[in-house]
Length: 244
Image 1: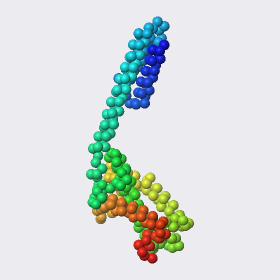
Image 2: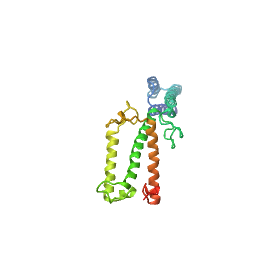
Image 3: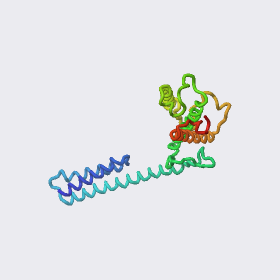
Image 4: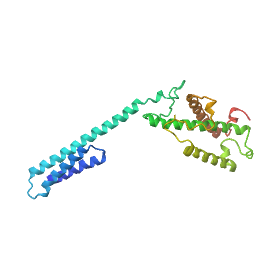
């Protein structure tokens, strides 16, 4: 019964390939089903001849080949459409491309991203830039003035290892999480990073997006530099500049 075994093997391979590469054209499924019915008929008959088995085996193999070709063409078209969408979107033509650095993506996060993927990166960049701008002020101000009750808390990273400083850090983390999950939700109908203007600042100040992006980038580098320098020297952000 080698021919029967061949039929089952060909039919199983064809259906396994179809299931792993869905969706597939209905006509291919119909062809496989018809071939399966025709190929199984000789197996149920005790008077089947080798010629009939060979013919059925060829039908099953042909149906499987048609399915493979159709699925391959469908997958190729899908990949080509995705590549075309990515190629049509030009990240270097978006806001934030200014001199002297031009397109700012030192770690290559935007490589191969389509418009939706780039928007996610832009929203994350704006959020991190805003947090870094506030952090850069927060790392300098305590050297000159501290909130009442926090006079004994040291400046810089050392504050997080005290009871009051640790509690303040926990409040900041909770506040950041609340903004991220509730207040700062991205709306596809608005510009990336537009989370509202509760204080109506835009009515009196018109800040271009490029200014915000560049200041946010500078603040991220500044905070990172302050933290590394403090770990290396033990001095806070102001002391690093030579002030006591």
